Length: 158
Image (cartoon, rainbow, N blue to C red; front, top):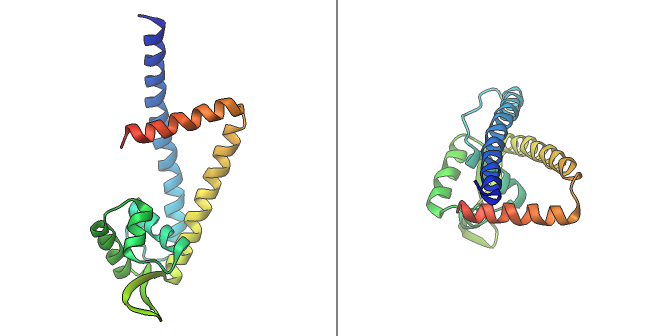
């Protein structure tokens, strides 16, 4: 096997290993996150990651309408409407209208939604700090390459 092919094989194997390790790590972290959430709120309706990230999007931008949520999260308006309706029914968000626009519906977080948003934000901040500490071992040139690689991977899986 040529050296180039051997390198590609090794990269692919490391890539797969990375995803397995990442999945295991995230499962541990999500367990901690959900346990914190259960402590915080007695009856926690099951939420998936899209719903949690919708709560985060609303928390960052409130008041925000369905169209803006869909754009920011790269979701369809139909899917976004389904998610926000579920979040309304389960008490994570509430509908509001602006004084100058009674036609358009906007979303804000309820007190429970705000607590979840804060917990989610804390989790992301810890992850960001952990990643920054990990990346400290690389030079600026290597960081530029890593940035390009992950940008290209994002396009590859589109």
